[in-house]
Amino acid sequence: MFSNAPTKNPTVLAWLEDKIKLVNPDKVVWIDGSDEQIEALRAEACSTGEMIKLNQELLPDCYLHRTAVNDVARVEGRTFICAPTKEEAGPTNNWMDPSEAYEMLYDIAKDSYKGRTAYIIPYSMGPVGSPFSKAGIELTDSIYVVLNMCIMTRVGFNVLDSLGDSNDWVRGLHCRCDIDEEKRYICQFPQDNTIISVNSGYGGNVLLGKKCFALRIASYLGRKEGWMAEHMLILGIEYPNGDVKYITAAFPSACGKTNLAMLIPPEFLKNKGYKVWCVGDDIAWLRVGADGRLYAVNPENGFFGVAPGTNDKSNPNALATTMRDTIFTNVVHDLDNNTVWWEGLNDNPPVNAIDWKGNPWDYRKYDKNNKAATAGAHPNSRFTALAKNCPCISSEFNSTVGVPVSAIVFGGRRAKTAPLVYQSFNWQNGAFVGSIMASETTAAASGAVGVVRRDPMAMRPFVGYNMGDYWAHWIEMGKKIPNAPKIFHVNWFRTDDNGNFIWPGFGDNMRVLLWILDRCEGKVDAVETPIGYVPKVEDLQLEGLDIDEATIKELLRVEPDWWKEDIVNIKEFYELVGDHVPAEMYEELAALEKRLG
Ligand code: GTP
Ligand code: SPV
Ligand code: MN
Image 1 (tube, protein in one colour):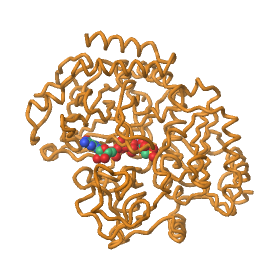
Image 2 (cartoon, rainbow, N blue to C red; image 1 turned 30 degrees about the horizontal axis):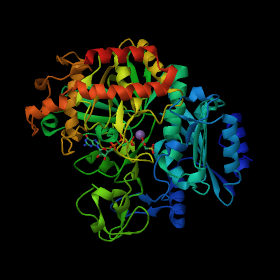
Image 3 (spheres, rainbow, N blue to C red; image 1 turned 180 degrees about the vertical axis):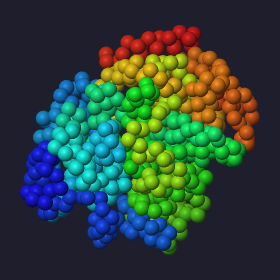
């Protein structure tokens, strides 16, 4: 079948032969990631209407894609961890018996490429050839997937060269089928290094290198091999003297990772010479380095970022990144100048426009309280953009060893309970802080929006095994890192009685990051509270901020009654996670309860 195959790897060839026989395409194409091939695929996608070529003067090499209306976000209810036993997947994951899952999925996949082309994408998560990187092959019948993977991962035959005859690669089969919601399944088989995704064409469901591989499969491998795969951004803060310190931060989907990773410092800090460098905006692979510090690598090659709310004030770096080589998904098409628009881009919605569903759109009918029905762009509309086009991309982006991490930050959307920032007492307590994270749900996954749910380490939808064992792995890792990062928790989303955010957020979050790094260096004292250490107001750099001291105190307030209420919910969640919850977590919970009085 493969006289022209760019590899002799027997495991690769056998798997492909088998799967291609199953899906039965008219044609098979190997993706080498070359400019010529990408250009030809773009042209083909435009000829069928799968993509729209945008104004090439204003947006060179940019395209627009609209997904099916029923296929706009990750589908957690249809995502499965197919481990040998239900217990290995744990109570927070959907589970299917692997042999039953294979049978059902192969039945759906059978002949589904008929009349279509099979694209074989060899890709690397992490720089090709780095000892920390991992190879994958995705078989797909979607040009949109190919073009997105060519942005989000490192695609090319050099991945196969570097793999050689090794069997250490992740198998990914994607079949669009009929985009039938009832037959949509996103299945991970961690023990088999395998992912099968059927009946979707949307982002996290089908760009198999991302959540399926770099988090679900990788978290399983990380536990086995002694490292960590986390839903974290990675950023570097450069001080005026040239020193750069690195922070990773885990916030749930659509809770501010991309924004924080690329933030622009407030004016007075910029004037002093502070800079922020982005290493990654969504996923971090973390390993212990020879010097006993924790090192972070971003396994991705681009950003699959939330479009709505992105503008030249909230995130100018993200906006600049999308000005070339970008695929926009489910945003508004401005027909007058053949560009794109989304809610929150600016105050000039296009007059002559098509909405994300492909219908004519009248911006005057937009109702903030009924976004779902009246928005021009889907709330989870996204841009797929190359990391190298980001104005603040770190010089360490392609580093094969990663960057040393000074601080790990957890955070979520909490209208009340969590203060602006607090520091955990130590690694174990920090892991506990991660385990009790909670956040309001967002449009990144299908289902209700704005409901508080527990989302430990921002990994609830992404841990490829039992959540309790994942917490145990966190605790174990702490013992293996002599110079471990300090662990913090932030909340940019505390609201006043009218529901307005109290903290300005975005670039001003830098003020909180500087306090965090000061704490890591032992440069400032803090106030001890039952949940951890909070800043003394005078240690926060508040220059140029229009907030009075009372408001800052309100932002930093730890209200024991709110926390006691939360503990009821935490206990329920711990019970749900069940008997794999490590004893250390219950110790921490008891200690917190005691401190709260
Ligand atoms: P995923 O890509 O889904 O994992 O999400 P993400 O964590 O990268 O989220 P992103 O940075 O795209 O933020 C999503 C939403 O949060 C956008 O609507 C932002 O405008 C909003 N947001 C980000 N940072 C802040 C902040 O500091 N304050 C407030 N109020 N909103 C913010
Ligand atoms: C998320 O939902 O956390 C994302 C987008 O980053 S997706 O790739 O669709 O998972
Ligand atoms: Mn994400």
